[in-house]
Length: 147
Image (tube, rainbow, N blue to C red):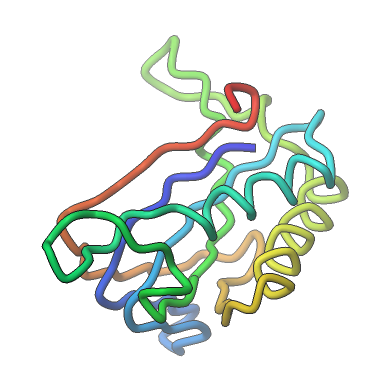
């Protein structure tokens, strides 16, 4: 699994002009899934992201996690994180097909909820307009193959 996590002061996702997910302070998570990914990886990634200490404490240091900061998550499926960019027209054969990706996308969000977080989301496979107000900016890339 791959995830691009951006600390935001707000973020939303619209489909066909209608807002389907929206958060205030928290993380915008763009989540990509590979064909070989597992539920264990989804759980580990959720644990890593939910525990990530990138919110400022009273001294201005990035020392607080999502829970302490009172944040939530907006999770958006992003198969393009597995783009093959060897040519000018990327290929996406490295991304999992929906029959594998959807259950793992759902598992990742469930794992975040199990840790007590509010989780908003887009719609898997939909054409979405994602808006965010990046805070910092702080953006961190995760790959479960490197964890």
